Length: 334
Ligand SMILES: *Cc1c(COP(=O)(O)O)cnc(C)c1O
Image (cartoon, rainbow, N blue to C red; front, side, top):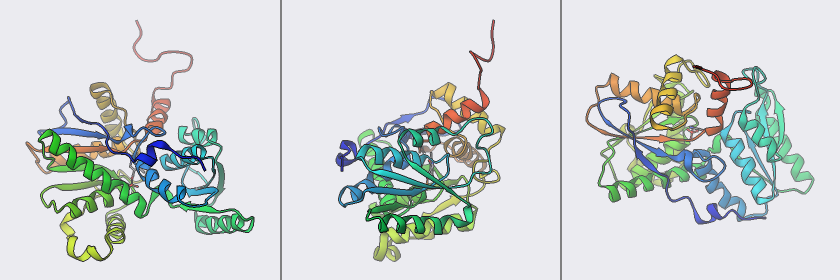
C-alpha cells in the first residue's frame, strides 16, 4: 500500500485571515480549511487524514464509503484510495434532484477520474446495500474498510480536535482571542471535534456555533452530542455542559442544498471583496447564516472566526449554474 506524505506528517495549520469587508459590527476572521493541501482541501480532507492512519496500519485493499454525487467526502476518499493504490467503492443514493439538469457535479466527475466504482441504490436500501457489498468483497477474500458518510465517527472528530488546537496556537502567536467560532454543521462531526477540543482545553469563555445546513434542531443537536459523548467516553459527564453546544437550524432555508438569493449575493460579495470562493450548500449558506445571527443578536465589537470548511468543486457547480457562458465571456460587454 502506498503512503501519503502529508497524512503521515499530519495537517498542522491552515491560513487564518482577517477579512477586509464589513459583515457586521465585529472583526471577522476566516480559517481557510479549504486550503488543506489535499484534493481541493476542506474538512473532509482533515477527517480523511485520520481515517488514513487506520487504513495505512492495516491490510485493507478496498475503501468503501457512502455519499451523493455532489459529495466532497466521496471525492476526497476516492482520491486518497487512488493515491494509496487501493480500490474505492462508493454506495450512492439514486439522485432525483439536480443531477443531469445542467451538468454532472464536479465531485462526481473527479470520483470518476480517480477510478472509483459507484453503486447506486434507492435511499431506503442504503444500509443493506452497504452490508451486502461488504460481505461480497469478504467472500472474494478481499479486505474492505468502510468509512461512514461524511467521514462521521471518532477519527473524523479527532480531525477537528486537532483543528481546535491549531486555533489555540494561532491565538497565542497572534495575541488575539476569538469570542465566537462559526462553521457550517452537517453530520456534526466538525462541530463535535471543535467542542471536544474546547472542553479538553478547559476553555469556557468562547462560543462555538454550528449553523445547520440541513438538519432540524432536535435531531441535529442530538447527533452532535452523541459524537461528543462517543469521543470523550468516560470524560463526558465531567466535561460537557448543554451550554457548550450551540446548534441552530434558523438558516437551513428548507433543507439540504436549498439556498436563496441572499446566499447567492453573499457568495458573490465575498468572492469579489475577499477573493475567496464559497459554495451554496455549506460554506456560503453558513456564512450568510452567521451574518444574520450576529445581526439578530446584536453581537458587536467581538472577534469572530469563521471556518471555511471547503467544497471548492461545489463552487464551480455554482459558477456553471449561474454564470455558465457558452462560447465566451458573459456579463457586461462594451
Ligand atoms: C461535509 C461538509 C460540511 C459539514 O461537515 P460535518 O462535519 O458533516 O458537519 C461542511 N462544509 C463542507 C464544505 C462539507 O463538505
